[in-house]
Each structure stands twice: as C-alpha cells, then as structure tokens.
Image 1 (cartoon, rainbow, N blue to C red):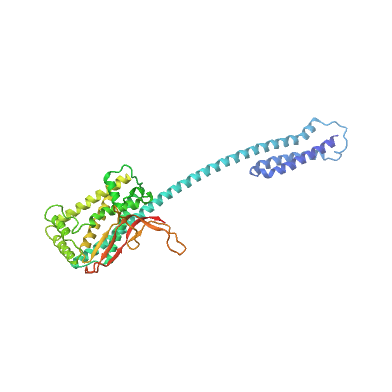
Image 2: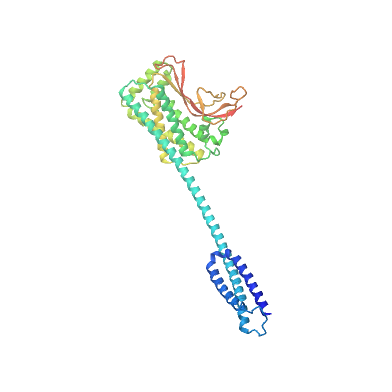
Length: 423
C-alpha cells in the first residue's frame, strides 16, 4: 500500500534525522559543512512530506504510481546516504588531525627537553664561573690586605728605627700568608688528581719531608698535601738565621757561619743580630742582598712548581708563577721582621722523624679535617685526632717583649694540620 510505505519512509527518515543530530556535537569543528548538508536534507524532507501528507494520502489509491513520484520518494534516502559518507570522511579527517597534533606535541616536548638540558648545562657553566670569580676576589682581597700590612710595616720602620711589631701584627701576617698559600693552591690545582706513580726521586724526598707515610694519604686530602709541600719549601726562608739572600761565598757569607757559631737563645744574641741586619742593609751590600733574595725566591718558586707538576701533571701558568713569587717575597719580608724583634719568635713546621712521631696537640695545632666526633656516656670525645701531616706552620713566642724569661712560651698562631680519626 502506497500510504503505508510513505509512512514507513517518513519514520525511517525521522530516525535517520535523530541519528544525525546525535553525531552533530562531535563535528562542531566542521559545523559549516554539516549545516549546509542538513539544510539541504531538511528541504528534501519537507518536499517529501508535502507530497505524502495531502488529504486522502492514507487511503488506497487505485491509480498506479508514476516513475517520477517514486524517484522523488527515494531522493531523501540517497541524500541520507550521502550525509553518512560525508560524516565518515570528516571523521577520518579528524583522526588525521589528531594524529598530527600528537606528533606536534611530541616534537614540542622533545624541543622543550632539549632546551632544559641546555639551560642546565649553561647554569653549571655559570656556577663554575662564579666559583672562579669568588676565589679570584678572595685572592685579590688577601693580596690587598697583605699590601696594606706591608705598607703599614714599612711606614712604621721608616718613622721609628727601633719599632717593634706586636704579637697580633705578626700572627695576622702569618695567618694571611697561610690564606694566600691555600687560595693559590685551590685556584691552580683544585681539579687535579694526585698521582704518586712514576714520580722522580726529589719529589719522593719532598713528600717524605712532609709525611713519612705519604702513600697512605687519602686523595681527598690532596689539596692539603699540596699546601704542605709549599709550606715545607717556605721553611727554608723561615730557617734563615740572619738575612734572606745572604750569598754563599764572599765576605757576607761569613755572617751566616758566625751566626751559627755564636747562636744562643739570649737577648744579647738577638741584639747583635738586629744591629748586624740594620748595618748590612744600609751599606754597599744592599744591592747584593737584594739580588740574593731574588735568587732565593726564584729557585724556591721553580722547586715548588716542579714538585706540584710531577704530582699532578698540570702546567702552571705564568700568572700563577708570578703570584707564587709574590707569596715567597712576603715570606722573606715576614722573616726579616721576625729577625729584627727583641722578643724570641719561632715558626715551627711539625713533621714525623725517624724514631719519633708527632702527637696532635690542641694547644699548638688545629685540624683542617671535618672529622665526626663521637661522645661517650660521660660526654667526653671518644674519637681522638691522629696527626697525619702539617699543612702550615705555627708561630710561638718565648719570653716577654724584651726577650727575658725565655722559659715562658705562648702560641700566637696554631699550626694547620691534617688528621686521621682513631678510636
């Protein structure tokens, strides 16, 4: 029956319209295409409804249907099939776009990760640069402070020929000297590795002078060991009995032999030494003494650099060599000041001797190690410090300002030592 078929078709079209409306929210990005398609679809549906909703349409009609009316009825079905095909194409396009977006997201994540790695690497470089600048600033401040102390000492010696340095001035000068040695070592050798294999004999002897058991020194204490080698070489200046730079031959060489011959820890000896120094540094020997001091500084600088080069395989720059010579010149100036004092002073570098070992003394030593201290039930320290090697010497004073009562000893500056923990 035609009327019944038309009603079925209308119901089928209405069902298809409901399905299309359900799919419409998922195709919002292509709303324009869908809108045009459904407008055409509604138009065809309206035309079909007008043809099949006339009076008597639901009653039997004995007249045969024309081919044109059948084609018009079938047109909405073909339009709906066309919509379904368009929907599949659009869904396929959406899947392609989603895949492209995922690829773009992965690419952006990779670029972002690469940028993070670059920023991290750049920050590490900046951190190392800041550390280097900090060491350079500390080094410069120490040098300026030392220059100020040297200038004050020079002005004082020019204004009063018999001026005597105070204990605090001497201890400060030696402490600043130790800081300069530490900064010089850190600036030039902090990234090196200690290599005790295939070192020459003179390097072994220098290490034994610092520690008889130098093979047992931990690699973490390598910077302290380098400082100890510098300090041990500097002791050649502090052991000079009269004047740093006295020639080995000639008239002035006899002064060193004479001082060794008449040496005694008395005020008379120090008075003779002080007058002798002032006499020779003002006369014709002044130029020869300065040349001798320059030679001592030059030789010691080469010796220290050779030792550290054989241990670390690191080439020392000309700037570092010049800085080391400045430290040694300051050492010579400090020894010159000590030799001119009425009071008796001693710069002592602790080291083990064959048959005798150095014991750690809290009154004359301070440890540069960060050792953990365990306490027993009574609150006493259960972990003792065992002396390993001396890093920088101490300064002691015997007697009073005039050199009397030499049996009284005062520690003005503690030695910096490296220790091992033991129970």
